[in-house]
Image (cartoon, rainbow, N blue to C red; front, side, top):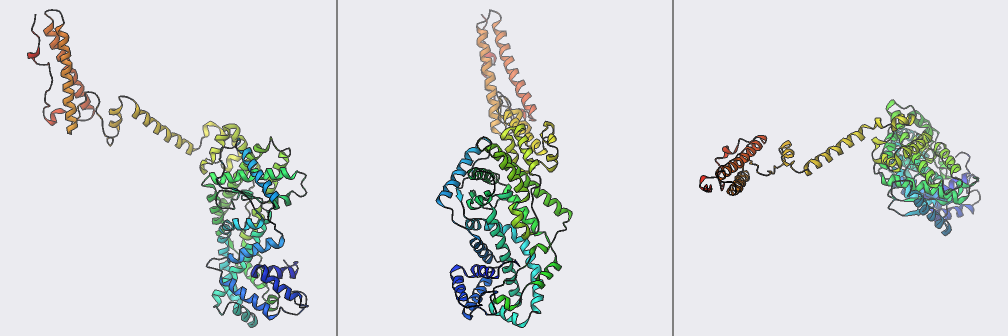
Length: 574
């Protein structure tokens, strides 16, 4: 920033604060006043212009809200920075080419992954579109550490302002309408952080290809998008056809969008862990004191448009405790798995279609490991790098998973975080893929499903009603043929029915006896009736004993409805 042209810095500040139209009016007025531009002499902006700036700054600081970062300022700075550095709306030709690439990418991916397409539309963004769509996620990632920085800066700046020159205090108080020092300090700090984070978002918008660069899902909802302007800038100097580069990036973007959209736990887990880790980053109070002390608060410079700035790279204490180191390692491992999976399926999808597929794969492995947008744009703002350090190992793992378990088995590992390989599994994939080393979760799931299926088979099997219900007293018991169940009217009715059935059997025996040889009819019929009744009684007694019943006698004697069992029904001997 020290080497920047003061005119450019002043113009950028004016456009961020006032907007293009009002800023242009002030700049025209100052250009007509020799020496009126910053660095051009001692002349100051005319009073009317300075009053406009003062009023707008007062309004801007008043819109800071309750959070640690003034995102009104942040968004304006991001947008104006992108516009200043150059951003154009995609042309009709660029839009058609990008949408066609995304459609083609989806077709190429369908045969090589089990994860279905996103439900949202394919989009083509300018850099300004990127700012608008990614701002909510950007806030979530940066606000936790911003809160820590703001708290430390408030304490230091409050002390510094107490000893500031009277002229400076008068200017600041006039801008803020006479608010108390504490409120003024909060608004100044939140606005300074808004400027810093807005600049980071602008940088991210200028280097990102889509919504999921470097394994981070930067947009909410189900969609995939390309930023043609950034893709074309990246392709300059590469000995690769522009159409091949766009198709390769489209496949990466589409694969990542599918993964984050169809694996419900993944996006939340990554973003929450990033935010949680950032919130625990320690702040170096001494470094903040030095930064505030070195801030240029000279009224003359402020009136010339030189906005106070802070260097956040020195305010973080980078000594992590063991818990933080483990948390960061776990987060980097998960992102390595994401980036590795994207690389593996992208290589499968483009292998038969792009002549430069292998070369493109190597280019993006290097980019993800050393030039990840997160580290370029977020690292200086949140105090740590998030590098997928083991992309090659993760990519090799996913390729082997496909070979060992086919596409379905590979992608099924995303069903639950406990199914994913650990860092040790990347070191020794043989152990992971051996049949004897199924994860405990897989074993539990298999056992649970087997138990459910076994229970369903037992319920459906004929003749198992009594044994099934007997194993669980809470399940109502349905009597089987001829069974006597005591304890309620239905049971007694069943017992009576059993007697009737037994009598019917005796009648059958008597009828058979009528057709027997002379001298055997009476004995045969009686024996048949007796055997039938005895068999029914034994069956009833046996089942009642198995159910733990006291016997039918506990309910009183059952009514004998047996027909054909008495002597009066015995046919006379011939």
